[in-house]
Structures are given as C-alpha cells and as structure tokens.
Image (cartoon, rainbow, N blue to C red; front, side, top):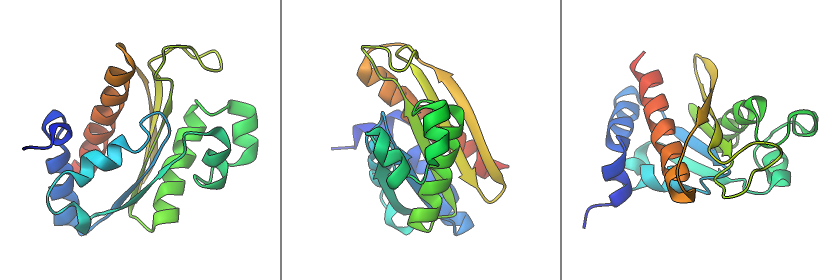
Amino acid sequence: MTDPLTAAVPARDVIEALTRRGETVATAESLTAGLLAATLAGVPGASVVLRGGLIVYATDLKGTLGDVDADVLAADGPVARRTAAQLAEGAARRCGADWGVGLTGVAGPDSQDGHPPGTVFLGVAGPDGTEVTRLELSGDRWEIRLGSVRAAVSSLLERLAR
C-alpha cells in the first residue's frame, strides 16, 4: 500500500532535494501534531534528511520545547507570525537541522484567541533566513491540517529551489 500522505503532497520532491543538497530538516508542529514529520517520513530514504520533530500542541510546550520566547507568547499568543518563526528556528536548533518548519494555527471547529478556524502561520527557517506565511484555509479539521502540511511541503520545496 502506498502511503496516502506522501501521495497527497510533493514530499518525495522535498526529500530528494534535501538529499541532493546534503541538508536536513526538522519540524515543530502544533495544529498538525506531527503530521508533517509523518508525511516526510513516509518517503523511502527520509531517514537521511529528516532529523526529527517536536509536537508542541500545548502553548507551554511551544516555549519549553519549541524555544518560543515567553515574551513573544505573552504578547502575540500561540497563533502568531513570530511564534511560527521561532518554532521553525527552534526546531532546527533543537534537532540540529539545516532547515526548520514551524506550524501553528487553528484547526477548528472553534476559534482560538480570536482567530477563526483555518488561520495558520507557517514558518520556514533555513540557511538564508526565516520566512513566515499566514494561511487562511477552509474545510473541516482534517482538511485544514492536511492543507497546512501541503503548504509547508510546498513552501520548503520552493525555498530549496532558490
């Protein structure tokens, strides 16, 4: 059976690009709860480039595991641009990877901290800096989580192609 997650996103392309470059990746995931790392791990050969991932579903773990500054969490909250940036940077640092991807947002069905379901912040940290994208996704919890993974894989692939 083919891994349905790797069939849904260009994860194989990310693994191949990282392998060619001799670089590694790590994740810090909130709303996706490890789905991004699991998707990347579904590609044969991923162990060469996937260093690991942090599941930081609880706000306090974004600080203690994800290395998000307490002042950022207090000022911006868990669903925010700076939080996603620091999660991406923290994942790379904590796991000793060249690239870090941070995902934080609201999968629903309820709003969180004034953010409606589908609000997602995606951070990608790499040798050339950190970029954050705000996503406005629609659908149910699964569609929002899968859309977040799709966006993360596409964003990382785009950065690797530069």
